[in-house]
Length: 335
Image (cartoon, rainbow, N blue to C red; front, side):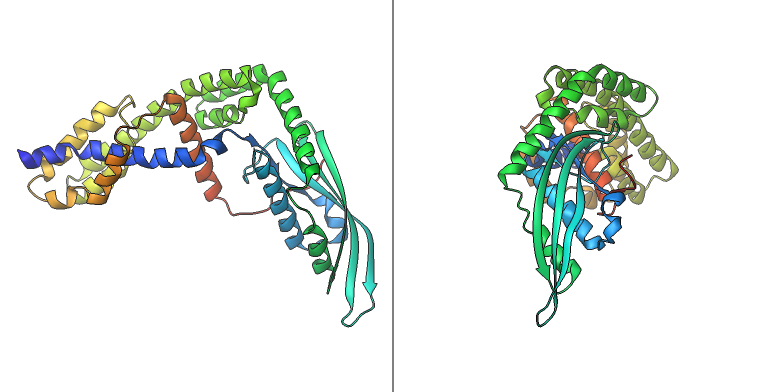
């Protein structure tokens, strides 16, 4: 009876462990979830005419990411309508007669914050930079490395762009809500959540509407994911009732949390598996001490449905980001 009691606790321990993981990630990423979204991109037409080395493009994108991040923007690699991009113009290029011979360049670098969907410029900031190096690429590196994210000009630049983005969301709130509703009701709940969670808290009423709608959509996602994971676990166990099948079903069951609609069914299946294994692989089925320690750390911690929804969307974005190579997003043309 004592051993059977331990087995019945299996599902609860999985849940506590998963909750601990989500809580730690949520605490670490809480500020990131509240930031504006601004994607650094490069337009070929603004770079190609001088046959700029691809490493220069990477340097520029990294500069833009640091600038965006410093002033409260999330600057992931996922495509977004609101972008920051550079215009790179060579003003002068000379050969410096020295030993060894060097190249000097003077460039005009302009940064823009814009809405790519409507081709609207929100803000711009221009810099004249000079650099010298043993070749042209090194000279460009020297010039571009003079850009510092703590330059006061960037603060005004970012604030102007941020103000325009807030105006955009407040003006187009109804349109965004309708679009999200259509996606959510046609089987694209994740895309709907992505649209709504991009709206920054500074947008006041629109943000509140978006969060309320997001919670409703998240409930739909909960039900969908719950049923998918439960069916997968049930099929695995029905096909072959063994220790190996139990281990295979475990990841799906662990994703079904207490507030999910099919939680009770998941508990029934977990108890059924535990009862089958109690005389065979009981020792392997028990949790390790480390998992118990993590459970105890987070046992008394609870989160609102809104926080869970935000964390879910963050994990979805993070997974999508990790599944893509770290690359420079390049658009052919502004027009």
